[in-house]
Length: 120
Image (cartoon, rainbow, N blue to C red; front, side, top):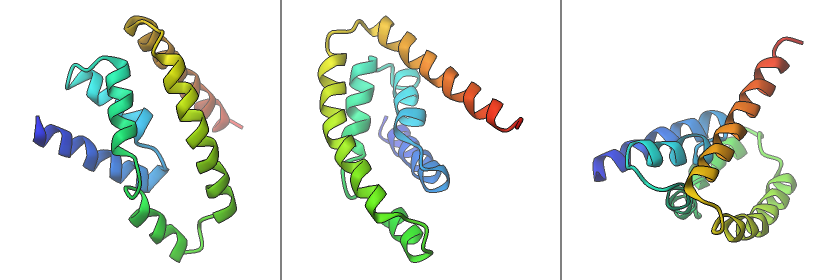
C-alpha cells in the first residue's frame, strides 16, 4: 500500500505541476478505486496530503517564470481555507453512494464544459 500511495502522490504531483490539479481529480478517485476508501476518507486523506508545503516547489518554479498572480493565489487560499471547512462539515451527513454520485456528476460536468469550450 505504501508504494501505491507514493505512486498516487507522484502522479498527482506531476499533474499538479502540469495542470494545477491533483487532489479531487486524481487522488480522491485513486484512493476510492485502488485503496477502496470511502469517499469521505479519500477526500480527508487528500486534504491532509495537500497541506503546505506540498505545492511550494511547484509554485516556486511558476513564480520564477512570472506565472503566478500572488494576490489571486492568496485570495483563493483564503477561500479554500474557509470553503474546505464548510465542505467537510456538510459532507459528513451524506451517504457514500450519494457522495460518489455527486462527485461523478461534478467530474462529468467539468469534462463536458472543458470539451465544449475547445469547440469554440
